[in-house]
Length: 519
Ligand code: CA
Image (cartoon, rainbow, N blue to C red; front, side, top):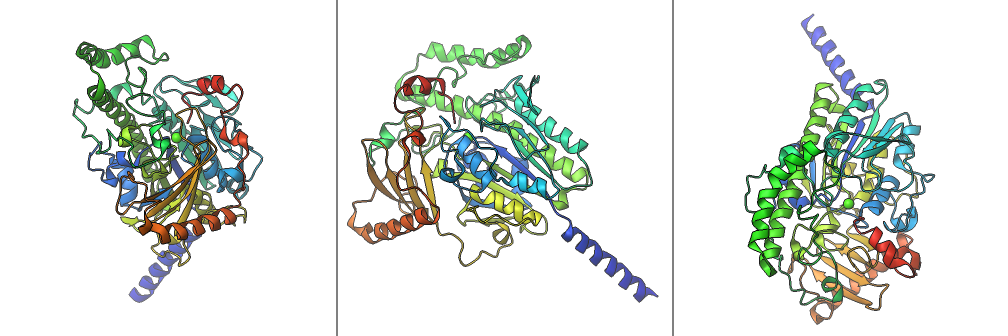
């Protein structure tokens, strides 16, 4: 009798496991804007900029990816890559200056919807055309603002009171609560934070106790040993940082009550700053401290948001059958090379954070250094849902990597491209090939057409171009071959259409000014 009972229980348990295995998992993508991996405690930046316990938890219970690369380090184009699983030269959203997302093309949310998933996107969208492939959407127009934002809810413009990160979380949770519980779901919870101008929730002003942040070793980079592009940019804390960036001017969308709280924090500190009359390196140092305070403070809300979503999944018994992904549309400079912003093939902007919890698939607490990409997200989600991946998609499901079974033919070289020129931020168009150790870069599309080669093993901060060093001749030849192969394989056009470079040409200056804060 006892044996029978044990057999029965074992069969029941096996049946449950099988049922769970057959049940298509829910997918929650929490996607922030401009979140540098340096500002996630799980990534262990020596500056210890802030603690992100909830984001870290995804990595602890899943896999942390240390080399997730973006095909184009800028907002709109990066989002288009995630949706389509294709490079920008094929999905058509090549820059933030004059691109508009063609919502009639194949995207993973559309395919999931067709396969019976309920789909929703809340928050940052930034693709100009309205979202398609979603049962529900409530998105910020353009870049969105941090306080009391207008939002577009299924085609209707509404104004929502509060702090944008909290609103995006509230609306996401409300949708989860009201969803049809008989169907699996896809939720894309997409934050504006920590995008410029890094405006914190009022409750987090001063949360760092006026600590002094360590400076990155390249805060005062002199750009020696490299070409004109790094010298001629317009994204430095020294030259490009505005009064709004520095919170010497308050955002216009605060209510009078909110403004009081804002002023109570910033005004005494700003008065001290004005009295000190800083210049040169001292001014850069002051701005860097203010930047780190504000940037990390916006992330306190993002981390809280992640915690609220994880708690909801646990409380509803959904955690075991939900894939949770935390990532950002690209990396960001937190003072490295004297910069803020992104766009470059260099590590801080090329690499984006990625943590994936997928119970039963992702090995808990594992770390992957494989070359993966936001290009792989669509394929991974389709794979999770058991939906065939269209041949036109260019990435690959991360499932085997999550399981610790990297396929023998996994990519060892990655293709990068950036087009937008000259405004904003004057980063010259470039493309290149990235491997575990090297980067071969071609700056093109301007009078300054040249190549550079970096060896990250010997030069982790990427401060020395070794293209002409004879010791690298064989490496250079190998990389050139890899680059040509990748460009063929990925169907990159030989000649880049001039309009892809965005703002240049007649009327470009005016348009560039209007688009000053794009990205
Ligand atoms: Ca971005």
